[in-house]
Image 1 (tube, rainbow, N blue to C red):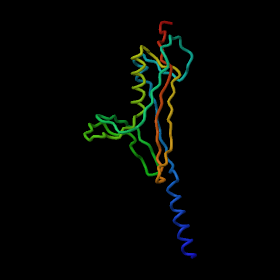
Image 2: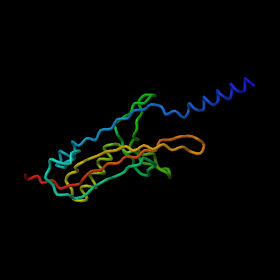
Image 3: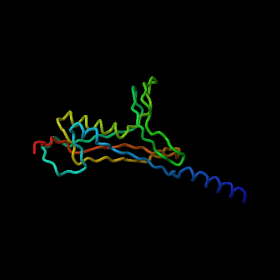
Image 4: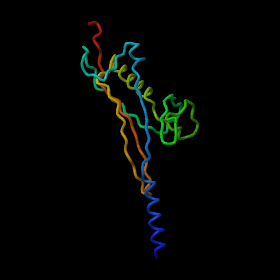
Length: 162
């Protein structure tokens, strides 16, 4: 009886270990240089500029399977197992579901600026980038992290003549 109790306790302890989330670390930088050089202003500040408002702008990105071409990024993350590329390489996909696509910071910023320019803006003030993480537990007890990224700001036409 004692052996069965020890065996059941051991099994229970080992199954709990799989529920622990391992440490990981990721890094992202939103580089505004390319846009500043072309005269498009992006600022986390909401003041200090004379402008005409165009509107609030927000884009949410959720990694997933994407058909067609996917982007690349030189940014890596370091986790407990070493360095891993977090973004897939640019290549055509031929399977029906496509390839997994996790948008890079450059890709997300490019999309936000594209939408702002389409609305007639030449700047984004009060720029914010937020990573949203949600944990999902399946019926079998396995857990996975669901993530999405939100970029937002205030699209404006900057008065550059003053």
